[in-house]
Image (cartoon, rainbow, N blue to C red; front, side, top):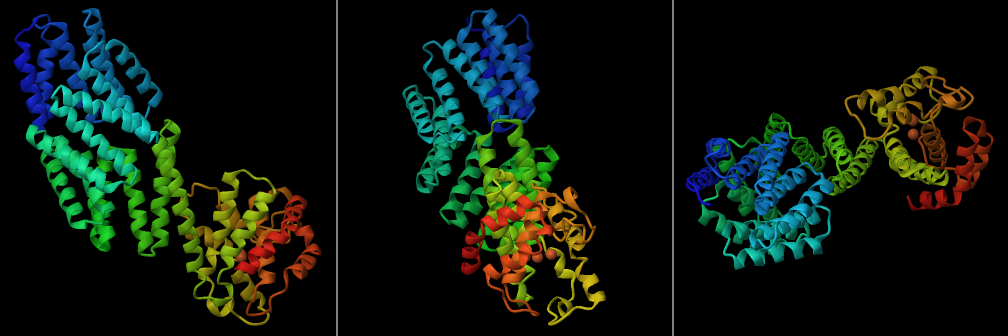
Length: 523
Ligand SMILES: [Fe+2]
Ligand SMILES: [Fe+2]
């Protein structure tokens, strides 16, 4: 049954491709709500297109509701293929929300309903491929994409081919096969230009820009990102602008133009914040952190990393989002690197303690592992130990490097460094509970430590571990006031002070002394 809705639908599609989503929404809605003039298939199709626009505007609840209505309308009319299209559209919404199980369920049902509709099957296959790609199953993704590309080609569906080439480009980029990715994106772009699909062109340009960075072709990377930005700006697509600004920031960062990179990242952050997109905010923060690391702005880098880590972790916790989980792991590695740099940076002026934080971190990790702590606790100990003396930057070097005995007044100043450390890190919300380590690494079990004179169980385990590692390093390395003591002798001395530490912590320290000696020799 053909009706007058056909031309209306294709007019709406033209509006959509030109980037006029508001006009397209109106036109689709006219078809969808014109009960009962048009048949159920056309009304369901119009609803599904509306849903797709809402999805791209990140209005997910609305998009799902519309797909569901379209699905029910089509099922009631016995239009199974149209119902399958609605489920396929709904799967895309779940993919955008990183709800993989839900997306897979919709696609599986869509596949059952699709019958022998080759193009529909190709579109469903494409989306199965996207899920496989994001979950890191690259061979499965490639198989799905290539199979659907073949079907689109046979049916001479250009739009389908453009999407398949684009996805193959994304897959190759994820595998860092930049040349291949470049070719796929070029093929996709050519079709998108021929079809006049402006929003799609912008997406391809944006993704290709990243590939050019991979190829170290910054001029082309810049041109692609600028073009994408120009289109997104023209279309009023704020979320797209955030992505384009971030790409430009990356280009400038890699070209070694930090001022412009920072400006672009700030614009990315502002646009991402305006649309409230947590993933984009997290990515902008992470990329800014990488810029600051290059500039040795360690404190700024950590501020950005803590923000990015918090958002990525929330996203990863809310959904089974493997890519985000991988991002969090990358981020933690970057974090540890910055922490180590930060720890080192405060030692450079003070030759005697150079390497102290790094060694204490290595010893403390060995002790934590000997205590069979879980990986999060071990990382907490590592980060806390790397930064345990950060407050010492506020101690005048004349006191810090003073040969011979300190006066009581001077020692009072030294004793302030745990609290100063907390002040320096005040604005940073770490993914690990390191502040207790920094504050209490000089507390002793018998209550004779500082700054709070805690005793017994009041002192956290992590702080005790760093404390014993700290004393061992202080004894075994050269200071302005002492020659280094050999490790064996240090252990003998420390046995006499064993009442400072929890018995299990001290036993773990003694038990790993051979390994600690190896670390000490290597340092
Ligand atoms: Fe200290
Ligand atoms: Fe220390």
